[in-house]
View 1: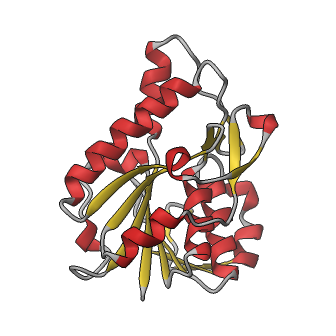
View 2: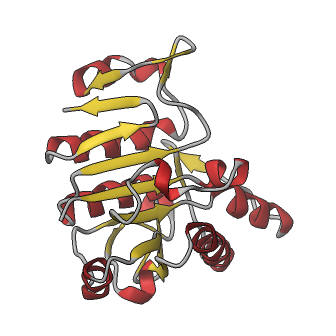
View 3: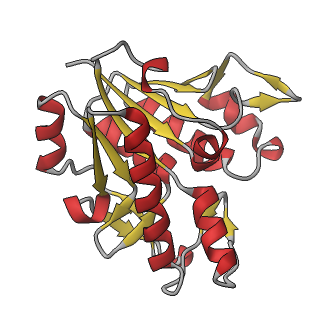
Amino acid sequence: MSLTLIKCGGAALAKEAFVLERYIAPGAAACVVHGAGTRISAALAAAGLESTFVGGRRTTTAAALPLVRRAMREENEALCAQIGERARGLMGDEVGLEAEHLPELGQVGMLRPIVPPVLRSLLALNAVPVIAPLARGPLNVNADDAAAVLAVALRAERLVFVSDVPGVLVDGQVVAQLSEREISGLKGQLTGGIVPKLQAAVAAARAGVRVDVGATTVVA
């Protein structure tokens, strides 16, 4: 089975509706991992909690975690409605995703390459799993990291990162292709969420997955 894993960022979802068929042929096998950054930041602000990031990854306190989880569920439900009847919404911690705890980021983890049985079952039925990146604990998981780990674990042919920008921008221009070596050379120019995104992209590319960050192809 040729599988495409699509990671859709919260900023992209806030900007416009998600259309699955932009990235796959109708009826083709797909799995979606989503973020919820815009919803999470709004929920934390409403509760008087600050959004903080380390190396482009969101930190999550024990007080913030219930708000993060609720925002993830709301995003999941909205995204499933946009995808349509093939979509099956999954909260990662409920279906058995596991992660290594990253205590320096609070209640955050790095996903382990373990595929829950329900995920394989849904793909076998040609459903589209739509995954909120939480792991048992619960632990919040960066959606870019989660997408890369699952793409490799599921042996996906392709991993597509969808965000609110057209691709990786260098000097204001979208770059058609970036190698791991070229990305290392750009460290001083790249900040914020693009940093974990490219780290995740390189990890998947090393494992033989074709990786597209918008219009930019990332190669190992």
